[in-house]
Amino acid sequence: MSARLVAGKVLGSLATLLFVVCFNFFLFRVVETDPVANLFRGHQLSKAQRDELTRQFGLDKSTGGQFVAYLEQTATFNLGRSYTNNQPVASEIREKAGATIALVGISAVLSAVLGTLLGIAAAWRRRTKTDYSITGFTMGTYSMPDFWLGMLLLTLFAVVLGWFPVGGIVDPASDATGFAKLLDQAQHMFLPALTLTVAYLGEYAIVMRSSLLDTMREDYLVLARAKGLRDVLVRNRHAVPNALLPVVSLLAINFGLVLAGAIAVEAIFSWPGLGLATYEALKGPDLPMLQGLFLVFSASVILFNLIADLLYAYLDPRVRTA
Amino acid sequence: MVGLAILVAAVAMALAAPLLADDAGLRAINTTENPAWASPSEFGPLGTDSLGRDVMTQFIWGARISLLVGLAATLLAILIGSIVGIAAGFFGGRFGGLLMRLTEWFLVIPFLPLAVVLAAILGPSVENIILVIGITSWPFPARLIRAQVLTLKERDYVDRSRALGASNWHLMTRHILPNVAPLILATTTLTVPIAILSEATLSFLGLGDPTNISWGRMLDDAFETGAITLEAWWYFVPPGLGVMLVALAFTLCGTALEEILDPRLRDTHG
Image (tube, rainbow over all chains, first blue to last red; front, side):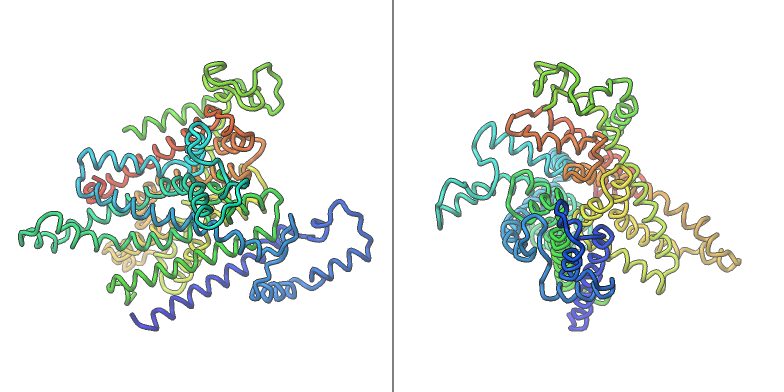
């Protein structure tokens, strides 16, 4: 894979990121016409105070000047301050990112693995009851709203049966540390992770199934069978690895997407991550927070799309000249 | 087919809503003597919510908005997507390349945050939700349509038409469009579930229209008023189930349509 190809894709991603940064600025300018009035509503401000505040926020500059200031600030990771608690947005995001990455990461991997296995099983036994039941199940889960599934699981397993805690990431009453704390966190993570995994494995199953069915009809597999190779070997050594290509792309892309899409699920389970932060920021609306979160989500999607692209080019030589 | 049957039932229910349920039951202030949080065994087919409102009424009326938004947003997305897709595929070159860049940029911006931001900016109303979902969903069909148009463009009859002096407009409307129409139809049917699910999610996050009841809003209300801790499953199971069945129905129909259009797919779909 040539350096030129890689450089090209990286540059493309950076361009998209820049586009998003600019887009972010103008988007919020449309909403927020007078941040000073907004921030200090309910207070009586004298004209002198208002002017001073306007100057402090840099709002006395022209739009062009503000834009330049915005770019400078973003480059130094200064994302403004939250309306709700006046903390720097960047540090709020940094604190909460860990919880989301853990939850989303585990769910993404699990849903990919389980979904792919289901897809393989369904394709290999197509038109049998196994196939139909798997396909039915995956189509069903794919059609449900992910947060609704969360509500169902939460009610059944946490409220009615009491097997799992109802929300949050740790038990607020305990001060356990080390392994005990990890266990506590895992207990809290079980239901939201289950929700996300089930909600998203459908896509992998369906894609893998189609891809495998396509691959199975290719000539080199007929040859493998003719050589007398056992069915299982034909499947595992030849068909599946080649059919995996779209799934790999999907996994990488979904990583970035699920990060952003877990907003509703985090809200249901009060999982203290970026999704919950977004949910709460919407209530304000806490615009600097929303702006910062939007930037972070977009950046992560761009990054993972780039990884998916490069990975696909690495795995499939046919794509490299495109 | 199962999908079609569900769909017909759902649409019929949505349209017949005024006949089936008295909409006075929807008013936020409880003017009836209904007990709050009554389970289905105590009251009505589906019980009541925190304010004593009949859940069944909400469910029937909610269907309207959920379906309306789903369909309208899809139409918007398909419209934009088709125009961009056909133009990009047909004209090719730098113009087409530019359009595709634009499409890719929109694809990259993650849907939910963008939708959330747009909805927060534009304000909560049915029209805005339709707009938001339409604007964030068009890149997907655009890419598919463009791919199809690219292959169609190379067909002989297009060349011959051009040799006879046909204008671009004529080529696009008389030759390309009719052949790309089946794909557009299938894509539309498959985009509707996405739109419906998006509406449910956006309404759940509080960005929907507060004056109109929809299934997503029922879920939001249920969550906010503590239906989970009260184990009031009758409040949140029906709307979610509704969304799921309608989305499933459209997906089934869409898959069936795809199979009809491209018999080769019959093998992959099983």
